[in-house]
Length: 389
Image (cartoon, rainbow, N blue to C red; front, side, top):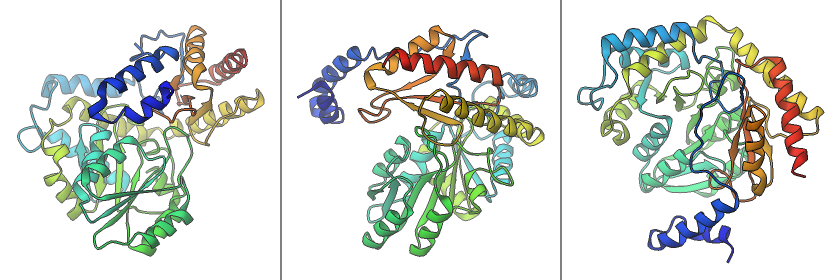
């Protein structure tokens, strides 16, 4: 059995931990797989790996809000939200986010991962069914499994297949469908209007993960749901991407939201997010609302970069600011390292982040980049790809 087959067979079987460790060690050595990549980028490096989609890093207004919060609130929350960790700044942020995304109530979590795990594991029960898009984020998969509900998948972005699955898999409990606005490894968009119609037809709850799409699209700039003209039962968001802070949140109707806030284990048994991050997110919401040109610049940059790759014969998945370039598994880290030597920082993605044989360079376009940097990056990516053919 090959090393890759050993990893796939044993990686999640605790009784054979040594087999999994040995197989992964061999696999990682073969691919020059680093456990961590230390980020120490100087000004000349073109950063194509950041989630800071609207270019808020270093914004003076946000930095000043954090400095003021340090002196007034300190660094940590002091405990869980149910004990002592829910400060006035957290309440203000919850209310501002609820208004920004068009829901009655927002519950804050210490991370986006905790938000998805928390809501799915708390909301669903044995006897329920969770329907996951086949490319669902790991946090949704983990939360669904922890819930004890039956977990079913459907082909990626396929409302017709979802309709068939909902028709065939009936249950006496609740049924919930989880999809993402923008998919983080392929850079494509969910057909939300069609999926919402299928959910309504079957009486299924709809949870939309807007982590990579919130505040970027739609007539009111709320995200993919706004762009599609729908209101999901549950809206999951993060503070660590468009808002360039840290944390996650779940938005819902008031009664459901209050129940989530007071019963979800991932929230009540965890320290609340730092009041500094809550302050940063509040200031970021102000900047995002006051400077819509940042969104315009993001999408102009995205179009220009995708056009430049196409002109150079470089394939890329999706149509969003997340650009995935397929590469052979064995070359992914070598190409990434070569690009870093050429002052281009990109995110290499190999198993277990993506399936074996589906490695890619995962790039994020931001509003902070200028047209010259984008053309330079496209040239060097094309050269690095050609050198490995």
